[in-house]
Length: 359
Ligand SMILES: NC(=O)c1ccc[n+]([C@@H]2O[C@H](COP(=O)([O-])OP(=O)(O)OC[C@H]3O[C@@H](n4cnc5c(N)ncnc54)[C@H](OP(=O)(O)O)[C@@H]3O)[C@@H](O)[C@H]2O)c1
Image: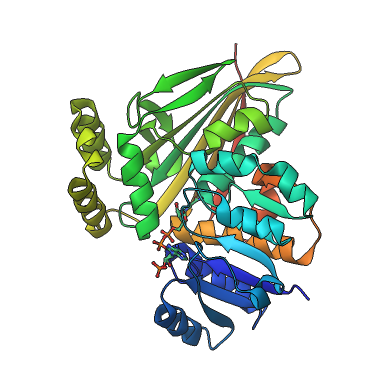
């Protein structure tokens, strides 16, 4: 019988919170997996055995016994190829992934036929960004008859704790430029450039955020049919945001291609602890309703990006475990709605939407 859940990276920063939440729902049925058995065992003990330890390197897949007993994998690390995802599909294992790396997610999208043929479901774009940003965009679009453009702005707290994989992803994307969809064309844009001000609401007020390669802006033109989507990032510290934009403009981030510089930047970023734990997301959407031009603004605010990512992942994983979802590869906004996920969160997570008529 297939009744186990394996959280890969399950004792890592985001993974441990997902493992704990799923362990509370399904005690004795959840494995926290990673390459270091003693870390997995130590974590398992901290859950009073509700979460089980598993030594696993995704390069090798599961052994035969486990392969036949795993119903769902929750992936909490960045992969470079789809061999492990294929392994899951071939064994009819459902798959949930918190990665924000679009080049990898695009590779998984190509496995649609394989997932369907093996009666497996994959749900991508799980977390805060991507994840709640996709659902907020979907919600904003649902308030209009037609949506022309969406701006997604994300503010992360410098006082928040971010895991190593998440920091590496951020550092790597400071240096790498990328393409966005504008109308029916792909346009090359520079990372952490082209700053734009938006009002995050309340005391956070208006802040300048800069283009960043979050996967939501690549996925939403396809899943929602919105022709132009842009995602920008800033930090709660205006000084740090300005410093990063200045370093980008000076060309300094080209040095991140060199391994020692990249390692030093990852370490430095991990140690920087000032500012708050607050995150915020703002959606600005332009379109038409009843033949009039309208703008929808949505605001989300809370604390701990990793914790909110884990909450979204645990919500989706629980549904995928309990119910039979359609087979194939999906992004979160194709199977889930924003409100039930927000309702599962505590009161410190605030959401608000406003619609304006434009002349
Ligand atoms: N969607 C969102 O909003 C969002 C937000 C935050 C983070 N994220 C994503 O969440 C993921 C996890 O981030 P994090 O900060 O929690 O990372 P982390 O703390 O570094 O955890 C990564 C985990 O993966 C394990 N691991 C690494 N390579 C492995 C392998 N080959 N086989 C098995 N396990 C392996 C590591 O343990 P060992 O080294 O001991 O194996 C570690 O436990 C990243 O992909 C990040 O981009 C998404």
